[in-house]
Amino acid sequence: MTYDTNMPAPGGKELYAPKRPKERKWSNQPTPIVQAKSVTGSSLVVVISIMCFLACLTAGAVYLINQSAAAWTDDIASEVTVQVGIDSKGNIDDKLSKVAFFLTNQSGVNGVRPLPAEESSVLLEPWLGDGATLKDLPIPRLIAVELDRANPPNMTALRETLNSNFENTSLDDHRRWQSQIQTVTRSMALGGLAVLILVGFATTAIIVSATRSAMSSNREIVEVLHFVGATDRFIAREFERHFLSLGIRSGLVGASGALLIFVFMPFFMRLLGGSNMTSAEIRRLLGSAALDLPGFILLGIVVVVIAALCMLTTRYGVYRILNSQHH
Amino acid sequence: MIRLENVALRYGRGPEILRDVNFHLRPGSLHFLTGPSGSGKTSLLRLLFMSIQPTRGLIHLFGQNVTRITPSRRADLRRRIGIVFQDFRLLDHLTTWENVALPLRVTGKKPGEYQEDVTDLLQWVGLGERMYALSPVLSGGEKQRAAIARAVIGKPELLLADEPTGNVDPQMARRLLRLFIELNRLGTSVIIATHDHQLMQQFQAPRLELHDGRIHQVG
Image (cartoon, rainbow over all chains, first blue to last red):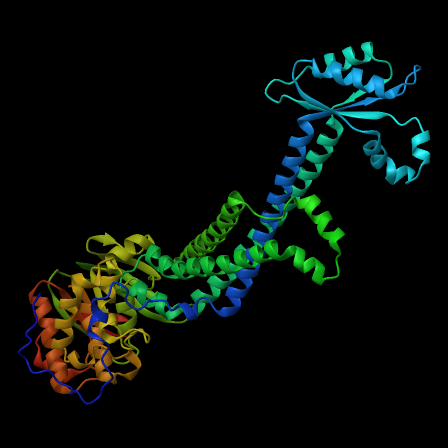
């Protein structure tokens, strides 16, 4: 249709209002129909940031514990210990050399390391205390046996051969420890997963409530959009884009906070009065307590999941509200 | 184009605003909808615009029964209808230009595709100098012209206008009516709700008169 622009236009120029720069009207980014400030207030940003912080902290801690446990299990699985007890002949050093030589010749063994008597004493110190008395006790000696992980020996056969050839020796393949570590790790992973699920539920509940509030405060805009022929999908998109942006911003803030915690944890421990021992204990639990590349990727995934959760919750929240209005 | 059969409407448990409304409007027709204040003109327009459902009866628009319709289908049909509200319903945080462009924007078109049409129309309704003004700084008459421009920018097949000349001077009223008539000549069916008898005398068109909730076709 064409309009007769030659007709005199009523009204004047006197009423007005500063023009926007001309390029604004050609812009591909026109004024948002739903304004961000009417949808996502600063308190919402803070709450979602805290949720993301908690999620990242949990995911990061579970990841570190898993890594640390995997390293332990790896070490333990690639090594067994042979305990050599004193027999009737009484010369333990001689017997230790013979057992070590015997083990070296077994298939699937990469190396053996007999522990000196001092090392064995150090291991027993927590129970028996320090002192010269240890030398007088019939303390068994240990041999650390490094296994070929690609071609491990048959443990049962090795144990039997060892027992038949040497009196008073035993082989410990650390299975009990491996099983305990796996139990602890799985428990922690499940605990972490439970925390993540709770954070997810809490975030969803907050976003549902925020969506309702946003729809309510923008009721007139939604009405006008319906009147001009907007589909529910279009209206939902107008809201969800703000919540997606909220999720990304809050996610990045939360993840950055969690990263700082991981980086400065030893410093925080000292600040709270923890000694070097405390740091050592944490290191024992979390390994180096430093995230590697997969750890960073995991935090990135948490951010993406939180942002997607915000967006999708809003989308379905808007659909639900619009559906209830239609009926 | 529009067919109503035994349509009745009441709000809640109140009295019937409309009862036994029957009429059939052909495509390309132009009608004035008239009647005293409170006679149900706005309610009838709201029924035709599918923003409320009749208490009973059937409404057919564009050959479809719209008394039971899905939201997406309703959105499709609304894109074929332009409506001018008595209270304008402009969005305060958008400029006049953006308000007028809204029906095209919701279809997913890019601003570059319609900027010329919107600008031309705004020039034509005398808002060329007010294109970038936010709606709260517009006068009543300017808001009305912006609301009309928004209703017609999508070249609707049906135009519903509720007191479209209520806030403008006689000269502008005639000009806006000429816009409606021009649209009508191009094939748009037009229903103008008004009680401005002077205006109705200037442009001879059949009337739908509402009295006591019933409708009478005149002319």
